[in-house]
Image (tube, rainbow, N blue to C red):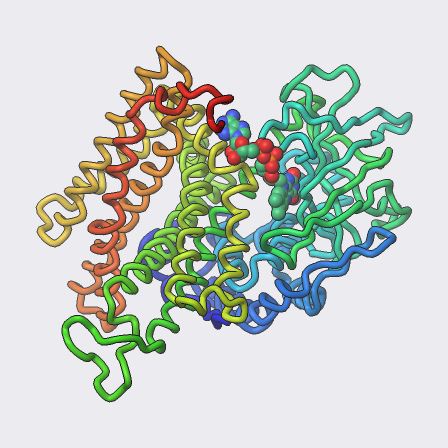
Length: 601
Ligand SMILES: Cc1cc2nc3c(=O)[nH]c(=O)nc-3n(C[C@H](O)[C@H](O)[C@H](O)COP(=O)(O)OP(=O)(O)OC[C@H]3O[C@@H](n4cnc5c(N)ncnc54)[C@H](O)[C@@H]3O)c2cc1C
């Protein structure tokens, strides 16, 4: 089983040197006093310890044991999960990035993202329990009434209670416009919620004394489609006056799914039988409010891709240095041994470096998005908040879909580096593949993210969101003009950056004649956008590293490795964008001309 070691040096590189998080926190009054460098270091060190010592050892046992549903609908999580959660609560981790008004520590959400990365790499299934709560808290914080905040938020912030997100029904996941769960007004101002939700992560478990479900449902006579959906808060136990969990509510776990991965997380069918709930936000505006949850969850899921790439890379690297097979093509590198370690072979290096590019580049992309989120939430000026919101909106589908696909590829490469042993469960590499596949599916499948990026974010803004980003990239390319060492990165980056706009124009033009062109181009467009965005981040990382070396750093090997990885990315990974460019403008006909009934005979 791969042993997880939190990559603190790399985390600090991205936070301090690439994104200047200390400067970013100092610029935001709400964070300037609390998010000091000493405080951040202490939190990262403690977080790393918790993940390495408490969560990583439960990852494989959680996979083997899974969750158990009992006849009364209760669910037991795998051995050790409950105890680890108690320690997590005792350590104050759930409250890290939440408002002080509700018992939070008022630290930046981006810092919470860094902790979530370490949690995710060490044990994704476990991390989903507090992860879902985090989204529920953000939704209540933004859309809840003062009373709802008073009753539920402080309990979620303290970690005493956990939260869920109840959207999906058996007949609909992507298309929530057709959901059927009903909400009927009770005389006391509450609502009776009736319906069945499926695939509800952390829907039932034994880790917390109460579970707060955030549920989408339809009011009587509501307009059809997405315009007729409202949002409700439905607790498992109705809170007493004093805030303690009281009477059992009419929401029960009907079954748990037997699934490909994330066995340690209970994926539940939740049956609502006239369960008492309260409206969050205005009637029929539930989906708008739910977007707060979904956006938090999308960045969280992007993190799953990056954190899985990191975990798999760590396992594969250790194995590749140890496992012996054949000799290097240029002569023995370990003549004293029966064969050379497999890391001498170019193809093994290709796999490891691809994993490294996705893990470290993915970290940079997720932290960049998290930084924008801090600004959206807390920057003083409306102008700053608006700009960050637009950038975050543009980056979210790219981060969600590209990083989960890349993370999944990285975990498959991890299996491959292990050869036959990668296929064997005890090494833990196949678990990472199984656990990571879901990231490409939940929180909006890759297909749905692609449409969001190309359709909603880019074409519906007449390309404005893309132009905002390509301007940032262009400015960076200009800033390194004349820098000979940077030319190897800046020239191809500038080329991709320009081509990105040209391709968008082309698709926009063809889409005016045939709307199928958007759907047909969208997967390649998203992947192209992902490779381009990572190219920007790798070029910036190379620049930081180059400057550190020029300044006479004592960590030359660390920075040289960054530059080498950037070189690999530009030479071996970025060229994939060319294939996507060709495919995205190839037209919809080759996909659409074949009649559905003629796909097979
Ligand atoms: C383990 C697990 C945990 C989950 N956790 C939660 C949870 O906590 N809460 C919750 O509410 N849900 C949860 N889900 C549900 C998940 O979000 C949905 O499964 C997902 O959104 C896809 O919906 P679907 O399964 O209905 O697939 P469908 O919507 O039926 O999609 C099937 C395929 O069609 C494609 N497709 C659909 N429409 C389009 C289109 N217009 N254009 C192009 N392609 C399209 C999709 O991309 C997909 O490939 C979970 C699911 C799983 C398996």
